[in-house]
Length: 166
Image 1: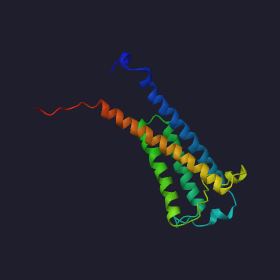
Image 2: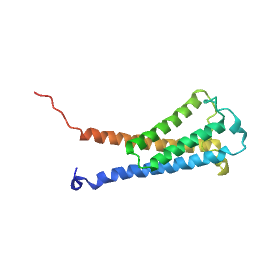
Image 3: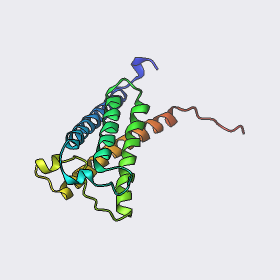
Image 4: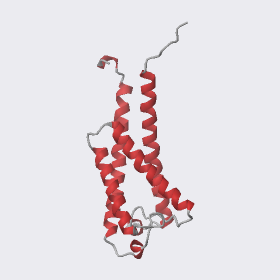
């Protein structure tokens, strides 16, 4: 399509998604940093076994999740294609959602240590931190699913329409 036929509104679409992906990357880098700093703490919860991943201590799980968050954040800031960025964010968010659902199903305490001990340092209770992180998860998952849906619907609109012969 030649540039003269591309509307200003169409040019805004990828820009909006890039802004969203950058904001998600910043969130992931902040939470990964908070987890990484917390790993070096002395809180007793770090040595307890995770209720879902019972082969890992909370400290080990924080290291693993902080690494995954950092990798996805770097990918979101890289020159990777939009579908790869979108897919990696959706994948990470769905894993977070499944983890939370798993905790709920086994009736484990849902006290979110998503921020490590940063929540304690800034005066948030476990419940407040959990709600903040659930909202953040909703923002990232909802946004990435919206942009995925929008990209799929644009592809369908661009597809040729075939007519059955009469």
